[in-house]
Image (tube, rainbow, N blue to C red; front, side, top):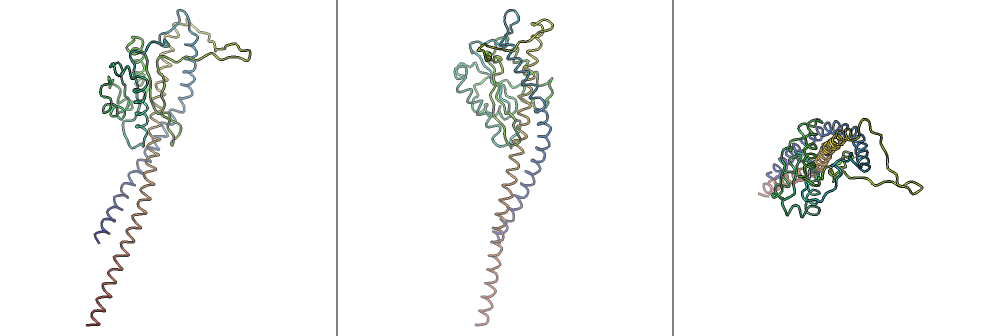
Length: 299
């Protein structure tokens, strides 16, 4: 009977866990809807602006040139890791952190050895990962709690700081590792070069001539670019954060759905085990009664 009690306790425990995972799945589904709407509305706008920015910087010459597209020898670099604050979302945070760690080992091995590599974590999970494995990094921890306020004004503080640091030559290159949202079941770990702005190659026409889109600037080109370029970069960074935010909820919803299904399978197996143990106990009791009755008759 002790075995029956143990199985009953396990069934009760798994049932309670299943209720929790169901509730977490529903909460994540509700949050995902809002986060998904935000990124799907913003992504086409941000991608178009980023393409326009790269095209403009590829065409700049003379006094209108901006330093944000200058490629310098990389002596100091910064890696921005965008993860979530909480776990229970499968391998989502781990995949982003591992991709950033690979960047540190392969692309910035020399800068890391020389102590010229900075890490800017957004979200606690990324900070925890690198604090344990790469404690020698120069951590910039001012924006770990950024997900508490995803307004444009608040998020834009990060790219403003990075742009200023790049212009002051505190960083020669800035890379961002984040989770790109595709759908609730798929999140793509993505590494983007934030600074300097990557330029595009001129496309060739059918006649073999190089072609690149040209723009008419009103008013003055330099005055317009001084405002336009940082604003586009801020919009691009907002996309990184919103992408990761939606990806987090999608990954958590999928993980909780999988956990709920696993709990259901475990419950099914436990109930079969419980019924077998119960039948066995009843059979033993019947045998004891029959054996006792037979002994009395023979006595």
